[in-house]
Image (cartoon, rainbow, N blue to C red; front, side, top):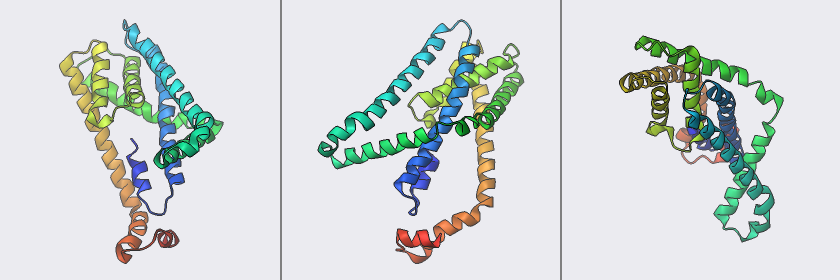
Length: 239
């Protein structure tokens, strides 16, 4: 999820402050997805599975507590022990402070307006999922059920601190489909089809963006490749 932030951090003309703010922007996007997915999952979640409802509530409360605890450590308790902390831990505290400060700047009405485009792209995924479900011959899953399934997938991916590259999305979707009574084989086909469609769309869009912005990329790379030991300050001037 944070690959783009890592790539931005590798640019010599970007400081740690820019990297922290870009990471918070990515986190804010995940927060908007969670804000939309949570009520949908609670309302249209799997029937006869009350433990899912209460587990979601508990996980959200836990994350709120963790964020509160991080804020207290950074702003209230951390400064008192700042001089006694190792350099790397002091630097971590400073980065965490900048990260939380950037998040505070995003808590405004302008950010809430972004719920509309986020809801549109999430709706596209729900439609894709529903079409795939119907295509494999499952006709007792309604569109609202598909909304609940996709909402559960989003919440698991965002709230569970496990890398998604190990198949977290697919396992979450498989479990959600099984909870709705979809047979295991059909559920696996549905999730693999959704992954192929989503990955294909991502590759297509990314390729188009790279083609359109190839000039920007060349201007970023050329000073380093053509002059060898160019200093970061010189790169900033050239760009």
